[in-house]
Each structure stands twice: as C-alpha cells, then as structure tokens.
Length: 388
Image 1 (cartoon, helix red, strand yellow):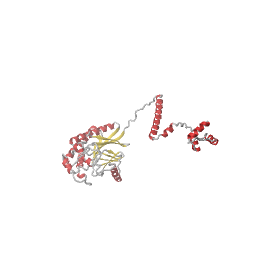
Image 2 (image 1 turned 180 degrees about the vertical axis):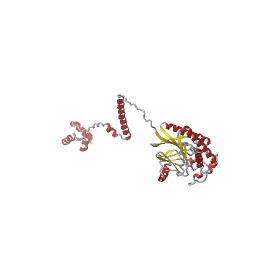
Image 3 (image 1 turned 90 degrees about the vertical axis):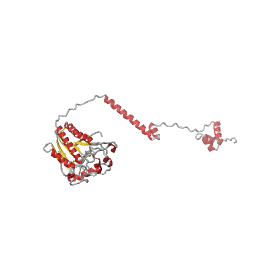
Image 4 (image 1 turned 60 degrees about the vertical axis):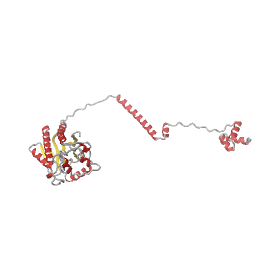
C-alpha cells in the first residue's frame, strides 16, 4: 500500500475527531487503516479518545442475595438470620431472668371435706366361655380356653373392686351398676361352633352362672356398695338356629341364667336384678338415663368410620321413642367411648371370626367407668384381662 499523503484538510479533520473518537473509529470514518491514523496522531502529538472502563459499583448485601439464582440459598440465609436474632432475644431474656429473684407463693390444701358423689359402672359381656381359640388359627396373636377364661373372670371382679376403692378416696360411691350384656357363652348356633366347642351350651351356661354369682359375693364382701344389675341377652346364647325378635328372651340360655341369679339373691337388700323381656333395659342414674343392650340389633357391615356411623343412626332412631343420655352395649368386641355411647370389649379377644369380618384388633378387656352426679360420665378405663 502506498504511503498516505496527508493534507492540511486531513490533519484538521483528524484534530477535530480525536477528542471524541478512538483511533479505530477515526480510521473507519476517514476510510484509512488503524496504522495510518495512529502514526499520524503520534507525529502530530495528538491523543485520540480512550474509553475508560468504569469501576463497578459495590453492591449491598441484599443486592448480592437477590442476584443468587438458587432460591434455596436465599431461604437458608434468611432463616439463619432469623434464628440468630431469636437466639439473641432468648439470651437477653435469660440474662434478665437471672438478675431477678424467684418469687413463689404457698398453695393451701382444700378445706372442703364434702366429697362429690358418683356411681360406678362395669360392663360384662362377650365372654364366650366355652369357645377355644387356637393360637395358630389367629397368627399367634391370641389363645383362649376354659382355664384362661377362669383367670380372666377372677381378674374382672378383683379389678372392679380395686377401681371402686381407688375412687372412693375421692368421691362417695354407694352403687355399682354391673351390666350383664350377653354372649357369655358361644353356644351352638353354627355347625363349626358345634364342632369346636368342648362343652354343650347347658353345661357352659351353668358354669358361667356360678362364676357370676361368686363374683357378686366377692364384691359384696369386699366393698360397701349396693349392686344394680341390668341384664341383656346376646345373640349367641340362644336355643334356636335363627335369632328371634319378640320371643328372643324365651329362647335364651342367658335369660334363664339371669332369672336363676335373681332368685338366688332374693332377700339381699344390696342386690337388685333388672331382667325384662325386651331388647332394651333403661336405668336412671341421678338425672341421667342409661340404655343397656347387647348390641346385635345394630347392623354393622364394615366401612369407613368403623361402628360410629351405624351406632349413631341406631341411637338417633331409638331416641325418638325414649331418649337416653348414654347407650351401653357389647357385641362388637371393641371398647370405645363415643361420647353418647360406650361399647364393651370382650373376654375371648381376637379370634377367627374377627379376622373374617375385618374387625379392629383388640386385646381382651371389659369397660369400667363412673357416672358423676354433677359431671355425668368420667374416668372411662379398661379392665385389661391379661397379656394375650
């Protein structure tokens, strides 16, 4: 390339552009090379414009945090700051508390000697005295036979007395309502029961009768309470293959047992049996009405919510004719406190039938509770029968 011959006009243009443009920009505008422009600028002693790289502004902590693309880090940072502030406040409070002396006050014992009054209630049902549960038939979760049944019966009455005495330290208890709610025997209502039971229904009900009579005597001898005994027949202890309705009582081994027990204790002023021919038995305790029955009139076929929905439907219908404040029943082998009902557990515990109907698993127990004169039902607690 030939040497550029600079004219006075070219030099004037160069001087004009230099203060605001770089050598590269001047070369582009004058259609020259960078070398030609920079050499001429150097010869004329002119400095072309230079772009100054600005120093970046120092960002604040919050600006830096906001630039983080990962929100997790921002969240962790924020949480850490909050925890630090909280710990700082706690430390300040602790230091302040240490500077002040503790001030206590004396609590005086209650001067009132007047005890409240309550009635004890124990629910006895679903013993299935003569039935045998083999452990291998229920995944080794339970076992049951007559010897175990005898041990459980002893514990029921012993624990009932213990509970009464414990509560008498705090409240006046004059009466025990001992509800006999049925299914004390399994009977022979199905062919498989006839095959598996080691004794006939008549023999089984005779033995259960002796156990209950002995238990009543034990309570009379070891407490000062009177007994009110409402009786309900179950669905197992019947003489017929199918359940009767209006003549249920007349075809029940249990109804006959109740009448025999009533006759046995006739003349004892501390024992009162209530044996009627209907499904329900009503007992008034203070201003409250309790309704006792076995529970087999409540048809539960499984489903969400357990027995609660079905039970409340039945109670709602029954209350239309005669209202009760509390229903007490057995049959389902589950001890539950539903507020307006208490259902009893069982003595036999988990068996093959319970597995088949997909019942809730429950260890053997019977229900005990108190009816307070002022506060109604309280202290609902189980009588745990053994470690099966």
